[in-house]
Image (cartoon, rainbow, N blue to C red):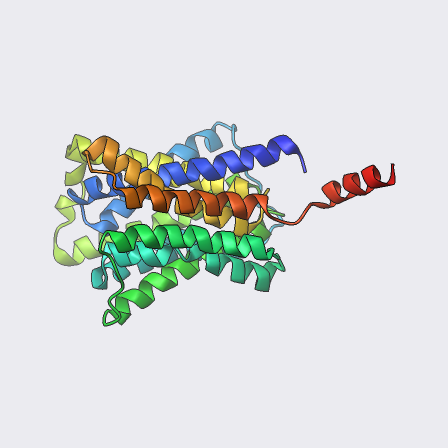
Length: 315
């Protein structure tokens, strides 16, 4: 594998976590002006429109001829459709803290699915590192007073299924990227999401007789700024970069980077909102970072590394 391509893949994974970490803040801003479904519609409209420009100009070439497009549609059904829908309804019955706790287990689910469907294997040290990263997230949320109320089984189940959807996306995308480019997959994902959320959003407003209010959030500067961040950076850029990273590194290694977004959220709250950083934030963040590094550095040697080691011993 091209070393420069591998470095770029890891850079994309880290960039993803940073963008996702700030997305929680911008989502809060957007939801002050619009309903969740309307926010998702505007978010994907912005991302699809921005990507369409280079496609029309020929800067980004897409070729779906002779390819099994239905598999990409299945991917889009998992993420973003499945994830955002399940998360939205799950959070109606559960707290954001419960959502954060459950989402931390996404790397574990990804490892299981990657083993079952892709035959990806991880070493014992990698498994322990993933658990270390998960424990760092859990420690932060627990110290903040968050926990899981098992009486909210509907919300917990929906949030858990949203994590399964992301894990399934990581695994399926890893397989599809052998025949599709990251741009080809991303463009279909964004288009499907936009059409789906737009249809449901307009139908709900038409039923409620509030179609005239659909564009009203666009009169707000903060809402537009939030939508541009969520649409361009947190949707388009993260989709392209995650698909690129998944084309270069294993799904299990990629998924553990999601937990870094927890650290970024803490930093964003401290820098932009003046929230106090406690010692448990630092301790939990250290566990997360150690887990991410261990997952990606303690794997099995690649064939090229083994060959070079054997040559050195023979010499």
